[in-house]
Image (cartoon, rainbow, N blue to C red; front, side, top):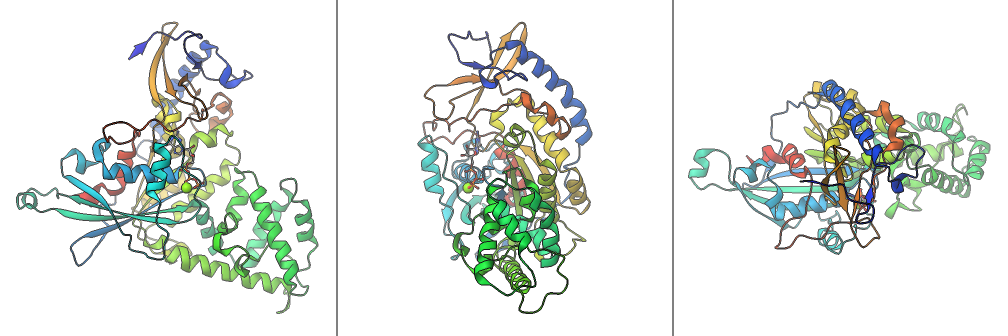
Length: 506
Ligand SMILES: Nc1nc2c(ncn2[C@@H]2O[C@H](COP(=O)(O)OP(=O)(O)OP(=O)(O)O)[C@@H](O)[C@H]2O)c(=O)[nH]1
Ligand SMILES: [Mg+2]
């Protein structure tokens, strides 16, 4: 509904920031029109350029059927830290349990979706996804705590098949959907799998010049350590601890470091202090060090680490996934100015290689070729007015162009979508100076009341990141839980779900 522009006294309007302005507090409404016009102009050409990219051709339903006649599908949910995995998984399960907002899922739209329940998960050695605790946090108006480990939950869905005759015979079926939430950082180990210790050291070495303040001592120690020296455990420990601190001190968008960082150094969990994580890079030009050298000790542990992540994660979990959603916090990435985007894209490209069909090169071929549907989702789309959502997907399409093209060639269905697992804002059209502007209304985190806000213009493509100074999203708190047992608000979560599991419910 169109409304008159609110006055500064009666409403808290946040128009888009202007370069050089004071960002969120800048109330220059003319800037709204300029930025929106710019958005409209850029988006058409971009969408034209990427149309059809995400077309998938996989038609086969990958699922196993057990002795009860129930089928099972394993869905992986991943993304880098804070990309929205826990909120997405919580919202997804909540919607499956009360599907009144899942009209984009064909089984719901066609009246074939009966009900879903939570059931014990199949893998006793995997932590359970704590759905109830995360749902309670959201209901209390808070975001869930960070997680950083793999967890799993089984949702069993009862549905009627699409076939007319099966329905006439009263046939209903059960799909066990096993959702596996795991840190995207672990996928950076895929790159490691292809390297031996010497090649890894050569990849890390040029990055030693860049490093956050406080890591100089470790960098000097690393440069000074003699690879041919004795197997000194205390030195190995100091080098490994310093290496871990260097990784953690790297800027969150230093994707070059993230790519070569062994995934478990980010969050060692049970592996903290174990020999598996007591390795670090050494000078890669040391020739052929002796068997009892520091180099050989590090090399052995590097190999043990690779074996561990291969058997405990890639083989035990990753290779068993049928479908995958990768969450990307695009508003966050763009708001940070997109620094390091090249290496981030390379990481996403590595992720896409894992899902390749056909001629997957080693080490990806070791992982099996099970996944045939991948959705890359630009999350937190509720922080961007919906008239700019095409820009978000266009941006993601452009980032993934090469990888998606290759995956499509290899007959995997790869899609991109802009979604909000939990919509924290509603939209309101504000008219000013004869122009209509779509603004967001929501409660900023830590504040009591709602504000009306415009985040500015989302850049039309990675090439337009220079314009990103004009984009400033606001962090909103979770919305109040709707009454009457209704499901939480979302944006396009049902469309992503249809891409991921729609065919398994037919
Ligand atoms: N507006 C909005 N914010 C979201 C949404 N999903 C996540 N967020 C924000 O992103 C933060 C991280 O979300 P999580 O779901 O905890 O992210 P994660 O990927 O599980 O993070 P780790 O467990 O730390 O790896 C939340 O605390 C929210 O601030 C969403 O749908 N909309
Ligand atoms: Mg989490």
